[in-house]
Image (cartoon, rainbow, N blue to C red; front, side, top):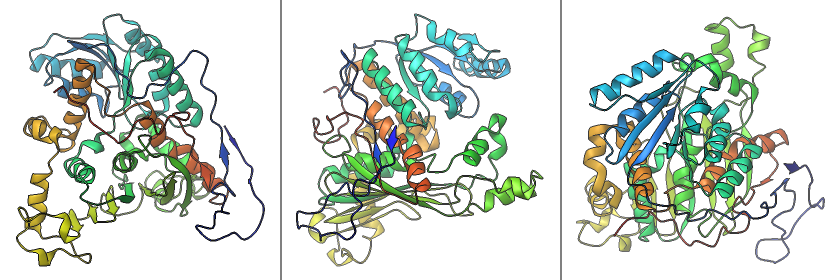
Length: 466
């Protein structure tokens, strides 16, 4: 899917603005396969309204039961079927329906292929996938081929081949394929997105995101040790979407801009190999045959000259952080470790700022001003759903908002907040970062997963019924 070709072997180069720079010099090219004949894109896809969204859930381990519980609070949904390899998990999840006063769902279990029987049903509109990520793409593709919309936990695909197969299936079937990226619905992220869209930061030039989460106490929870084994075998940012989602939305990726190339670097692995030695008794030589670096950094440049910085670290003893930052010509937003905004004084009107002296390029606005800004620029989604989301829960409510918005758009025949090209772009870092790392941190071309249509829609938008 990629060519290890340096497009120019010349040394030196001209300065910015001379007109002689080739932005593709020294870049590893990636393949963009031609769209199959008779197939069309699904940008802005709308599908027939569904008065009732009938749902089947696959995977009832760490994430699935919480999703089922949230759906019991969403009007206009029907939980039709539940599936897991283990029958006891299906039965335990059925009790969620019992407590909600809802009829029990059809159950599927006991076989590696049981999920296909759920997808084959003709009374399901949406298949909700919460399994380990190794089978996400396969399940999405099969479900769409059976005429179902799909929503899949992150990351929804791990290789470029998988990504293109998911895209082609979504385009062929004209079905929604949404990645369940909850972080784009968090309160600070959505408020900041609204501020950016209202011009509060001027032109946004740079965004940052990350998944920094020490998993030492969690490795044993992944059935069959699948997550540890994946990190042991694969190098790169294998879990990029929590950071990528908010960053890509604020920069209008494939809605007026596109990612052109990336460069990745990583540190050597230490903490996880030592964990394998100390806790699991693994031989040192075997433990240090560990592919993924302890800390991975990826820099991305867009068509319009903007940048994204993404990090991944699940080993270091650092506080949890998604590192969300937005930097523009008139202001700056930062979520971790402390939420805050820095703005040029003229970007904050006098109705919300009592002291202009606190607004300068060298410090954050006061807590009083920050709180007033967050009230003033609270996103419409939060204005409508915040109270219910906090009641239902799920990472502070953002999981409920994610599910509610998915159902709302399906019920009203609206484009989803995240489409299959978002899925592709955010997941592509897994393989693209690996390619860069394995080639001495060489620049790698980011495929245009829209196949030339990245500029057809202008600006990221949430759709509503007015």
